[in-house]
Length: 468
Image 1 (cartoon, rainbow, N blue to C red):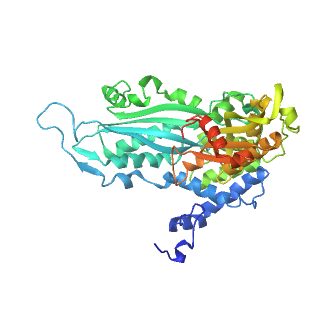
Image 2 (cartoon, rainbow, N blue to C red):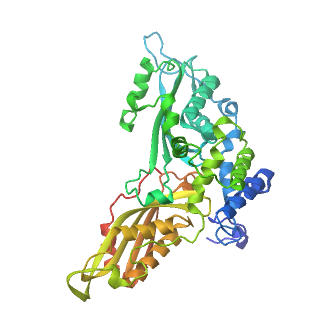
C-alpha cells in the first residue's frame, strides 16, 4: 500500500495527527494562562523550562487538565434529549418489567475524575441503575455519558454520586435512580516517610452511594435488588460509607492537613500556590469555593516531593567497590557467577511530560561471585527511591537504576520496571488498566539470552500494585 508523503506532514508526539479542535485549544487564552502557571510550578521545582523533555510540558499539562475537566462546559439536557424511547410494561399481569417498573442497571463504567482537594486524578468504577416509569426507557449509553459529564469536573466521590443521581432523575423522570461508585485515590508517600514505611499502602478506597425516588430510603426493597446484582463485585451495603465518614477518610492530602494542623505544615511557595489558584479559575472553577481554598497548598506540598535538588545518596557502601558491598560467606570463587534477584521493590515517581504520578515495582537481577552474600535489599531500595523521587520518564528511570547497580557490582545487571501511569488514564487516551514495562540489560545479560530468560522467569506474574 502506497502512501503520499504529505500523509505524515503533521504528527503529534504519539504519531497521531492533531484534530482541528486540538489546534484551536492550544491557542485559546485559558490554555495559554495554564501554560504560564505550569512554568511557574516547574521553576519552583528548580527545573529549566527550556530543557528538552519538559519544554512542552506546560502545553501538555494544560491540554490534559482542560480535557479532564470538560464537564464544566457540557449540559445533561443536550445528552438526554431525544434519548427517551417508548417501551410498554406488563400487560394485564401483576409485576414490574419493561418501561413500567423493571429495574435497569449498567455496571462497571470505568472513568476518572480529579480530586478537588489535591488535583490528582482518581479512578472510578460506576454502577448506575434506574426504575423506568411512564412506559419509556433511556438509551443505555446516555447513563454513561451523563455520569462522565460530572466525573470530568473537580470532585469528591459523594458529590459525584449525588450529582449523577440528581441529573438522571431530573432529566429522565424515572421512578427512581441509584448510583454506586467504587473509587480509588492514589496515596503518594513523601520522600522522608517512604524510607521508613516499607508497607506503605498506595491506595485509598471508598464506596459511596446515592439514591432518588424508590431508592431514596437506603433500606428500600429496590436497593436489595440493586445490590444483589453487584454482589460479585465486592459491593455490599455494609461497605458503603456514610456521608460524614467519606470526607474524613478520602483524600490523603486533606487527611494529612487535618491531622497535622496548620501550625505544623510548612508554608508552600506563594508563587506556586497562586499559579494553582489561577489554573482553577482557567478550568472554570471558583478558587474561593470552600472546598477549594486549601487545594493549591495541598498540590504544591505534594509536588515539592520532586524538587530538583542535589540530594545526597545515603547508600551504605555506595562509593565503595564491589568488595565492600558483597561480603563473602565462606570459600569464594570469582570464576563461578550466580544469578541473584531482588524482586518487587516499590517505587513512586512523577512523569515529567504531564506532571502526573506513576508508580510500580522494580526487579533487579545481577551476577554475583559464588561464595558472596547478595547485596542488601535496603541498598537497592534506596537506589530505586533516589531516582524515583524526581521528574522522570520510565525509560530513564530504568537506565539510571541499572547503571548505578552495575557501577557497584562491576557490570552484569538487568533491571525490569513495571509501572502504572496516571497520564494513561486521565488524558484523552483513557487507557484504564494499562501497564508499562521497561528493560535495561548490561554486561553478560546483554549477550546471554538464557540468563535473561532465567531472570524473567523469577518475576511474579502480577507485581504492580494499584487499580490502574
